View 1 (cartoon, one colour):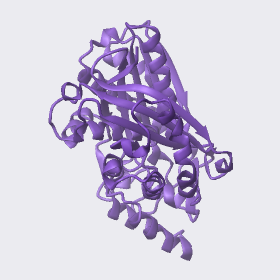
View 2 (cartoon, helix red, strand yellow):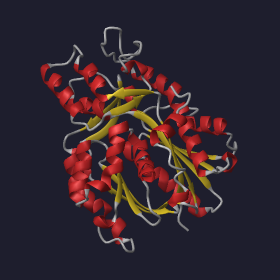
View 3 (tube, helix red, strand yellow):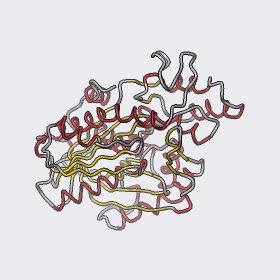
Length: 386
């Protein structure tokens, strides 16, 4: 018995940021030094991001000023407590919207959900959004709840492992996994190159999956985890006085390129009929940035088509931390997967940790939810989300 992702739901905030407009906003900050003044437009223009979504309306210069931007267009830097207050207010609706979308698409009754696994690294609150999901979707009050916090961009994979274990142990289990990240809560004007890169790529959003023991969808065949100790200081996520602080050095893409082939090798060693990366036509690679996708593609000798879903998500949503790889899998389903198509998913997190999974499309023509465009689905999923 192998667990299967039955459906993938997504949700984004209503405010969309045009990359050129937000580049100009950050470039115009009076606090920037001369070098940072050159780095900001270079980072934004090289990001391969065209649009992102944010819970912070004031980052859209056509909207009124707020706690993160004053009326003169100067970016402000609220305390971590103030930022987390916004998380407490704005994260639960995204969790709920993505969860509802996934449950609806899976065609399961909300009352049949037996386990809820929530994932987030961009804020903290208790009671948590897991209880909002239970209440708003009408789940049984006895549902098992588990939260995975502060693991960064690769956290969807341990959540999927947990879901698969529950489903494989109990054929009647219906496991709901929900990842929601409000990354833009932690933006700020800065001369620090790592913060500049973070400002240029991160967006907000949520994604959810329903996992059961059987059924059509994406079968979870295998997982693999690799830690690259020399990368521990190159990618990190810490709590500062003015928001959470991302360390994302320029060495990360090079480390990914040097280690990704070895990280996915166990998936091929344990698979029948898959001898090499070229045997997998679809790679759902977490788009931490364009350079990470380029290095992965080169290291594995993949054609450009293999990462098309990842590049599309980077273009339209940016990096949404833990939720992003689920957006990519959703995009791959939207693009069309024939029954039996193998898929490898990858994400990279602090440590440096490389998480991978091998999946197979099973009966996907019946599980993709029709031919509506992804943008229409997201609009439906985010009705009422601010």
